[in-house]
Image 1 (tube, rainbow, N blue to C red):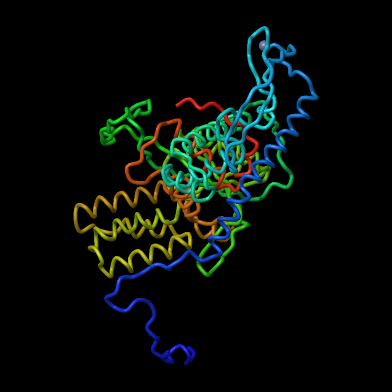
Image 2 (image 1 turned 90 degrees about the vertical axis):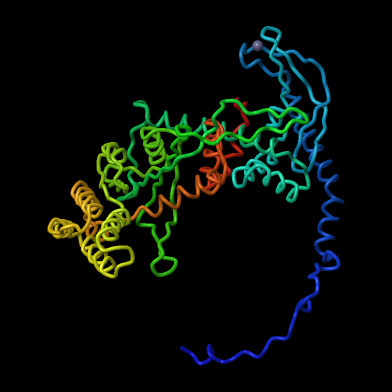
Length: 464
Ligand SMILES: [Zn+2]
């Protein structure tokens, strides 16, 4: 170690307020911040005017196409004349005059320009709706509403942010469901890509989400405070599952002992085991990662429902998560040797070493000779022996390490926390089924690095 580290630094001059005096803020906002804001405010009306101008140009081009055809009847529609309309963009409220058409047969009305723009009368439209939704899926709605104002200088209620999330989330969830149904249907193209990877690692994790007891949102009457929500009772939880696909060949070590993956693909659902595996199947095909020779390495914590679906893949390798195997040894060691006992450390360290070397049968032989000291320890020992015996064929860790498969489910556990916990498991949160699905759909888009897909999803009607 260099000497420099031990050289004493000179005593620092006292900065900041004198002890005992009230701390103060800067006496004025630094000019740069003030000027930035002023320039933005100065040009905002001009930007909006230019936006309206460009929209008018679109309208003129649209008008040259003549009357649109009715989508249901395929007949040319009749003009109902021009009228004023408006919608909200990131530069504020845009007002314009546009044409309305009506079908004489089914009386359906359309505003072709708004449809072309992807805007809706009186509503938050375009990129502003997407950005509001983005904030709403990252932080709770009231906070997202504050951020919208700080970022764009436009007031948007938490409810408006919520609506953007619902409408875009519904669109995204529908698209994912349709894709999954397509890839799981017998009609799907069964081409196996030639350049598919040799190995894909697949992991699944789940947790319970507190659900709303009532099916409808509560409405606040003017002047009446809503009573507090009842405690979530048993049975009002739903399991959320997250699945991860990654290529072990792409694992990198940013620092010694820390693994990270370059690419990973996430799927999630508020549903059963079949649904998450349908989505994983769909995703692996979208990525073109499943070839004839691809080995799918399934990392699980020992839950049967995961192993039961391994047969989905013709070539697969089941791996019991190494840390679950070790944790199980700890449970027994603590019961047998006592909490914090040094012998427990030594005992587990030896198991860790042997398991890494693939010697699960040696470990089992040793465990079978142990005489437990207490009934609690005996129970833990029996459970440990059963766990290792049941999963022995999934514990060839020496082989998995040699083949570069990895042995832990860390990637899926951290992914699941990012997808679900970070936004949806904060204190007191509970969700409607539709609300949770929509939020999950959008969070997956963001965490998969595919947020720009949101621009190619039309906002749909979202029924609560
Ligand atoms: Zn019609």
